[in-house]
Image (cartoon, rainbow, N blue to C red; front, top):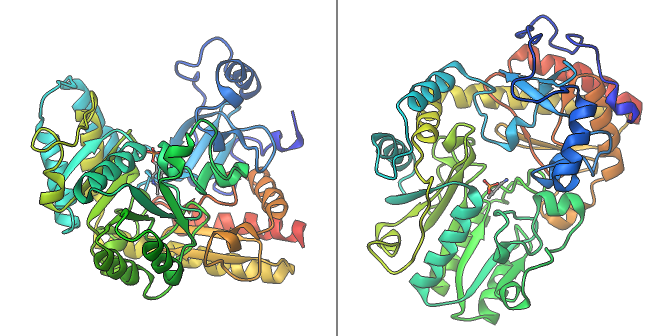
Length: 457
Ligand code: PMP
């Protein structure tokens, strides 16, 4: 066990007294020994690296990965009853915070009603309509169970629609773990320093071309070099898996134009940005209309989901109407649909104003505190997505993001954890702010950050 495991005593974090405090019962379903260290030992023997998704192993920041038993609002508790302010937010879905009462009630009702049924349910229709109302580019859609599946299926549609094989993605862009999309991907691959994954054939890897984000000239060169061969350009409209990197002015409109001129489809991966940057996602914010859209995370209110959608004639290529096969036993699961509906119904224009204000306060506070402590750092932010980069200015592409000082980030992460603030355990994952991140929560976070920056300075 390392020093970082000796976190604050229960209730001593920055929110002590401000959130729910009762966490004295047994850990539900956790088996004979419920302390973090004992649970980690059992996890280590069961799962590669002790985890079911690589970033959770804390390799980039050190220390023992936490075992979390409960969350409420902006707060989570570990198996040793330590309390943390949470900026992981399940890596995106929890825009309303943990255990939002409307979501919990909807899940309860849906679960009691039985299912899944292997048949269409009203919840699918309602959630589908909510997506279509929010995103005019989505005339028709299909629910799947993860963002990975959404991306993989959309590529299949794009290849079928264009009769072309190649896909153009961006360095540091992450679109799930399907074979074709792991080249120069961000997220966990960036965290572990992997350029690609073993087990992907050269043939498949060779069908993915990679360009630097925010570089329209490079995109044009790729499309010319591979004239009439590129089926789709796939992009996170605001990159959030190399840390937050916003599109330069004109970048997204330029991609739209380039795709159209070269007969390729434009796919916006809004798995993170959808319903987060605005109800209609980045496509609403930047007023650029993609051909296909990928969704996930918030759409399922914290339960497993993905969706892909777009113009009706493209989506009508999907079986049973068209020849593109794609299916799923648990697709449109009624409990997931209920959580998604409750989440989307709780989001109003006021929600986005509140998230922006929380994000702005946090951004300005962090910038000031870093400066005050003499630490070279910059803050990149898009609404409720934020990254502290340990370099002088926010990056505009993956190469620049990688210049951020990872050792500084690791130290900062450990200090924040000791002070009761849980940040995503990677310099390349965004911090996720939720509606439960009240001004008091932000103030508590900044108090912790002041000490953490001082320790670095
Ligand atoms: N696209 C983006 C932009 C993502 O951030 C992620 C997951 N972080 C995915 C796709 C993959 O989603 P999932 O983990 O649900 O497969």
